Image 1: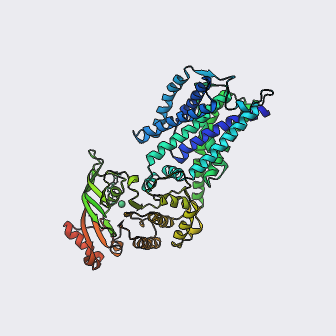
Image 2: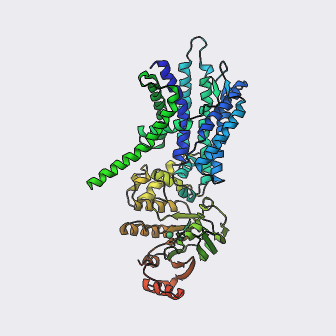
Image 3: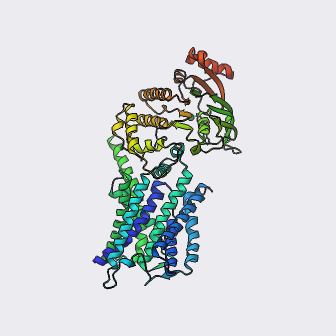
Length: 300
Length: 264
Ligand SMILES: Nc1ncnc2c1ncn2[C@@H]1O[C@H](COP(=O)(O)OP(=O)(O)O)[C@@H](O)[C@H]1O
Ligand SMILES: [Mg+2]
């Protein structure tokens, strides 16, 4: 694998690290199975692309994209806590609705951003092409910042309340925590991160496409699960670190698999590979536990 | 002070599973009083406590805590007034969080939660001192996950958590039932200490008539969602378990079988 394609894998890995941190908040910390990501990732991309194409500042575009994502996550949570719609179903409703909304925002199935200023432009040299190095570097700074901010938040009073909400809602309420409000806020935070990832994604890809969200949630989940096998969940900063590393490792493995011609895999096989991987990761712990039980039964 | 007025609650109304659990339950507890509650399985003891804490809302009737009408308040809104320890040792704490994080959650009970650090250095000192009084060695394990503790240790920590912030009412729902006899005795002794040290108004459900008479100032018995027996003072101090049983049969005009009431 060439250095350029390695950096390319890293770049996408860093973007999906933000998605994975969002998925960590919904699936793991809040215990809220949320598929909104497939809609909020392209939502972030659509908002950013339209603003940048309209001549607005790319950082402002990222910020507004994150706010749009927060609104989407908040809506999913609202459908659940206020209207009592099942979590998974609430998120599917918002995801489907977002497909139409994203098309409305973009006004066309795709928007090109080639030649327009992005958050990376100020750092890219006009003499020699260093985008392959600069883009991952800027993304790395953003991801590290996001991770550190999240760590600080989850160690705060409000952050701890959010974790208690997911871990033991009855206990959380007995301690005076409004689990409804915490769920609304946590889901907004989760999807803000995912939409920010979408906003950065369109700037690395030179454009937005209406179908760019397909499979986002599965990739994010894969990263979280790989991360969980990498490091022990001894404290939350280790968990967020593992999640970031999981996203990077996942993209590297995919790049390696696609590069190995003898396997005969192509880019369009990506979603299939991811689905199989996540499926395996979900059943492996159960199979392991079963085997252990059987052994225990024999020796007892 | 706590006052429950004519509480009614029916689960699954209008279905074949319709189950009237609270049927006009009224009870007033004076400040500083420690009341034990007994009653057969399904008498509505847990439902009563859940109604007081706001986990369920009664169909009718009203609830006052310190003169404040809390009938329509949610559980989290009342948390500043009501502290509780559950029967299941897993229910009162978060096993994925550390001991100090659990204590920090309780330190903030009924207060706003902002962005300042949850586990403050000054808290740690307090936590260590309070945990040391349990004599379980937990003062050196602040960073350990709650899930590593035994059921008895978790109940002891739950009790500490319930007493970190002042409350108007402490609810204990068979909080020693899941423990072995020795641990149960320890947690019960701890309960007595914490209630008297903090002069708490407390309501303790127990499955043991012995415990009901040996602890607290007053004993009430629930049957089919109402208070059928209420003894305190001189009368109560002269009572023994058989007297309690006899009184119950007298009030209800029916004979109890051994299954209906667990003797302790
Ligand atoms: N949330 C609930 N939904 C439906 N039925 C319930 C619920 N909580 C309790 N019950 C029923 O109410 C009855 C009384 O339960 P409970 O108050 O737990 O009794 P106790 O604590 O005195 O043993 C039981 O028949 C129980 O099945
Ligand atoms: Mg009960």
